[in-house]
Image 1 (cartoon, rainbow, N blue to C red):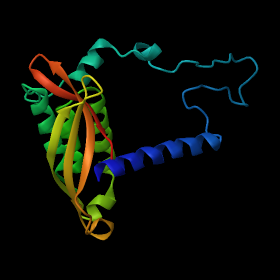
Image 2 (cartoon, rainbow, N blue to C red):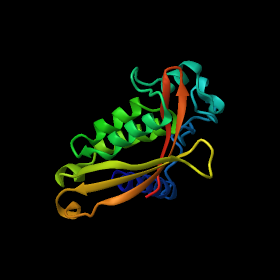
Image 3 (tube, rainbow, N blue to C red):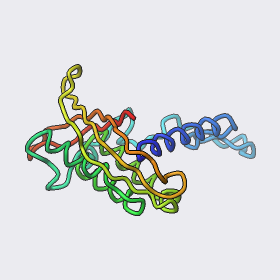
Length: 198
């Protein structure tokens, strides 16, 4: 359930951005001269509004270090153990705890997996539908194996049961496939990519 809603949120955000672009909303980072500016005033147009330390797509080393920092007990001794822990937390949540679960997943991961968990946490914090429908998800890991075709990738299969009221009542248990990767840190392995496929 979390995956379907997250995908919907991203799609709606993209559609909203496209609609705003078509409605003549201008770039807020580009300074423009107003029609009432006097002829003697110099015209200044900002062409690169990124903060100086981030120009050219670079992130300062200190900020990059913070982004890759994981919780003290996040790492596990094997890739399988890191993925099993992440999967167990990922598939078991209730509407009132889903944002907190996503924030916890962020502390156990790095890279793309962390970014998506933080985005989901922000999204679910504002999701009244989940709370009003008393949605919960319960599941377990069915299988985990290295990918036969992509080096470094793992394939996980979970069995999940989503429950709740209204549209969420009576949903059948379903199998889900997730592609994932781990990164080795000084203290062990952490999840770095998490890509649900259905």
